[in-house]
Image (cartoon, rainbow, N blue to C red; front, top):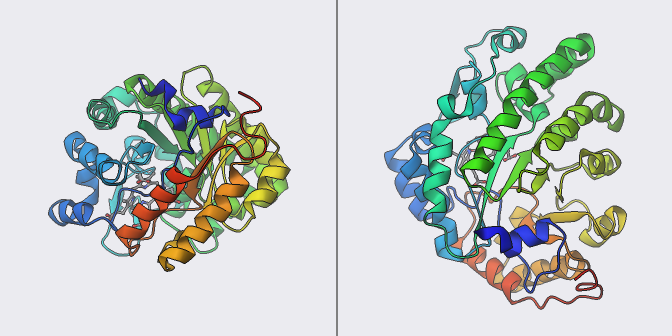
Length: 352
Ligand code: CP3
């Protein structure tokens, strides 16, 4: 069991003898072995074929020995299981529905049964667990309700989120209804992932950044609190991901997640000081810092490690996903630098 992995220990705020590292989108187009498989299968086929999803999940951890693997899948698949058409074109990102107004798509939503409707995810988890390197944890995930609501209401990605915000402000109780239905679907799905073997779950709230603190507190926070409370005592820490949200820290600490993600726009030392010694965090290298020369990259990584490892509860990561053009050798060097970094900063160990 990976219960004693350095990754899980750090999520729980415990002292570790070396710092854990994993990268968002660590399985993906920057890896030649991913591009090779992807050349043969559409993205959704990779996600829905457990043996292929397992193979892609394991590619980066076999190559670089990260401390955690993240299940290869996508946050939007649950919307398909809830009754909405989903397509990934070669250009232009994902598309939900077939052009009907968002309010109609919202009416379509049903709560899926994880085993019947998303069994391919659970099968992939079981296969991955059988082949993970020793000490490597497996992270399951879902979208957070707000980010899923934006895709659902917009029908895809958006520049200004007009449709989402118009819906939220004009029909607040219907908007809360959508958020509730999403939580009703996400909680059993994440519990099923944990039962199938994931060691932690991450909730991706990519678009939380578009909200004011007051609106986040009103329209999002209560739903996040219900979801995270439902996941307590399941034996898997909960990580929260967002970016561009250091102005929402006061609200986000109230979610109750074990780990909060930080993007590169806030200084790691300042973020840890603001959040305090008991809030575990992950982050926060700019994904484009991997395009520097090796010495520059090493300096950027060490700068963050020194500040991040001041207290226990620190996981090295990027502030967002690995860019598809990232040189593979820079990812290797990044992992080596984190693993070679001596733990035992000023206060580490104090909480034994
Ligand atoms: O991190 C991982 O390696 C695990 C797998 C994973 C993917 N998507 C695979 C993927 C995870 C955790 C996600 C989450 C996800 N998906 C988010 C939240 C995180 C974030 O990036 O902000 C969002 C918003 C999505 C929705 C989504 N999926 C978009 C907007 C796109 C198209 C843009 C893009 O990067 O290509 C995807 C496609 C997608 N999801 C790819 C991968 C590897 C690219 C597919 C390909 O090979 O063409």
